[in-house]
Length: 394
Image (tube, rainbow, N blue to C red):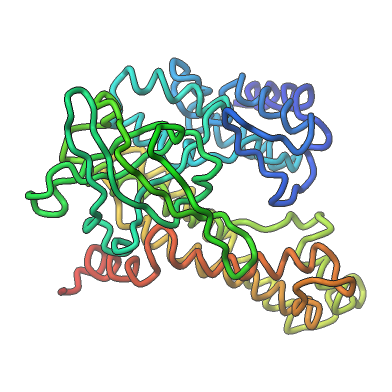
């Protein structure tokens, strides 16, 4: 493995631009897609290098564009990326949610069609799950897909569709048998967002951003070949994808600037609260930051151990609900501490009296509240834990 580590180091030294070895803002996130916009030429170069190597999806099979790395090799790759503070070359719902279920449930044609494009950042996906009357009770969804020859004709509405106005394709839950029990008449389909009859309307949030959309389907024709798995049996796929989504949200609980970053909690606390002998002057603040870092480290190790254990089974696990809930609270706590560090400078919304970073942190604090809703509310996660982990009665 040491030979592989050296190989990774040499490759990163040759292919990771210096600018990509610094902490980037949310606005510099690379989402890819057929209409991709890049914050810099370095960002584009970094995606092309990582995507070409298959290391945006390092453990996916090489025949589908992935890196084909073993679990141990991927751990080395991730540690070397962290060592040089490399930015993610690509952020993608295709990577974090759709790809894993396609690998498990998709047919060979679907895998060959979509997975390589996800790896290279050539396609941007959005998720069509929640509806105005079907949020926590997702299985009550009413978007209909009626068979018409070789097509489905889809009518209905989705809501809270993240970045639907920028997405190329959507993975979508539709009702294909309205007469079946609600969990049994659902199918999982894929289709192009440029299809006639698809429209989106961004939703402006309290933070001022509009990452979510209402999405409307009016007589949208979708080839039946785009069905993933079996018709009317999409709920199993839906649950598995939610598991991956919850793990993605849980990962927010391990985030934070590196200790050497100018924007780390420690350095920000020293800036606002002062320092004595190289330490944060406020003892209470030191305690809160140290506790949060210890919790984050323990959580990251627990996620890693769970990933190792998950290699032996493909069944959905209630552990994802535990991780989603804890990661949500950990991320919310991080921003609470950051606002406490900034004091009155966290109260700004606009104006010359506040730095851009201060204004962005306040908005990110507001955005973090949505972690307790997306991917299944915290209340739903606690119910799952109560029933499936603790075995409590309904």
